[in-house]
Length: 315
Length: 315
Image: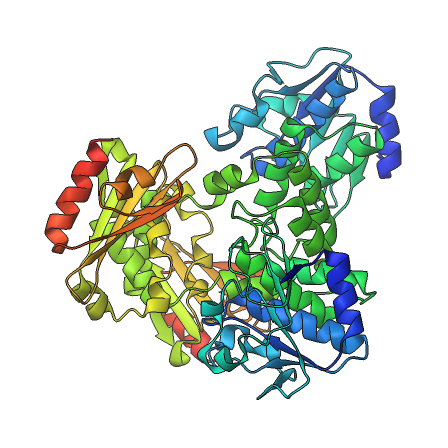
């Protein structure tokens, strides 16, 4: 495996042709945006380039791949993956290509190298801004489709510029996307200002059922499986739900407990800077980061809630 | 009244000293951030500069003015206001200074000129980024306090880069703020990832009581005054609440009705691009923009809701 600089990565792309580009399983905005931008950029240079159809992509992002897909890689193709952190992140459909991937462009600090060559920059907020840097080195001009692909990657991976990974480089790249005519407002409305009814209902339930401890500095909520079933939430509706109780004004740390189907309780703790969520999860054999940590508790919901409350009050 | 370019505005600031800087009434992040940045920049140039204490400022933004305020303007001071669109936007405490304001820096496309000289750029998303452009022309370096003042102005006036006013220039300025070490993540948590319990409760009530029309493309909710009183929401909690029902997935246009104390109903309509909110409000003598419009209905809530529903279904 050879580690590439951006310039070397650009040289690799320049020296090759007939590209097949792979996105990751459970595809998000960054892998779809990155692969779309790369494909569009390579085509602008006169190369033959396709993204391999990722059947898991949701309508939220599938429009970015429109007109770019093909069904299968051919012998002799140059195979590139973008935003794929490990072999396990390849969609099952693409698994047969493992071992034959020529280049990986990624921003995950993962130790797993699984391609012939790789450009990996863990400080990059999104893979899309990294892809754009390489395309720019190749003399690609940022047209509106490339700008929108890059913008979707950047904005979704930074929570629309709110997460801690956002850098000066992220903003500078977004400035180029704006300059190139990306319809950012329309994209923002769709990507960030839209909630499913299921999501809003479970949020309403949480507001009505959360317990405030220590004068409102700590919050916790235990969600019975029956409640999720009654509301009819999907896993998409519940995505990152544990970050919600923390958003209540004054709350420094919040614990969310969800009952799983198999008699376990999933605990997620979120904390603002200056507080350490792992203090709670470590008590239950879990781990994570100061801002976000988790654990699995093999007990019923009521017992788990009591144990978590005790752990929080013991801090 | 003399209209200035950025360079002329910089020359004005260079030629004067003893600055008293005014923010607007019901101060938001942009007026407080703009005045703080201007004051800090002028001090960096060796000038005497203060912001006039604005007693209306909330704890959310007051830290930006810490160490910069004074209680009263002195004779001979150079008086500058930032983000003040009209004389009516001056706090009552500052009203006696009207007629004696030397310079206005603003980004509102208002026709009201009320100062001796003015730099007004309506295309600028925030006043803060305009202030920074002028300071940069004066050779001011962006240190962390200036970066955070500018960032608060930019981010609050663009809904953290989500609103349609966000430009390439906005992002480029944010990139400079990041480079200068602004603690953007902490600021974002505080400014955008925090909800009052009152806000969350009224949102929960809306989710439970909103009516979906036309297969979920239209939504409407009528909020009785008694509900607001029972939940105990403040006007801050209700700020821009009418944008909330529109965020439900699939909703193209949403109408929110609020009962006021004096037997009237305030109607607010929000629409996504491609739909026109004024079609509804015009029927009730109101107006606004395609994306956001309003009207006041002199009727009881039930009658108003029925009339609005008819208007929406007649579209």
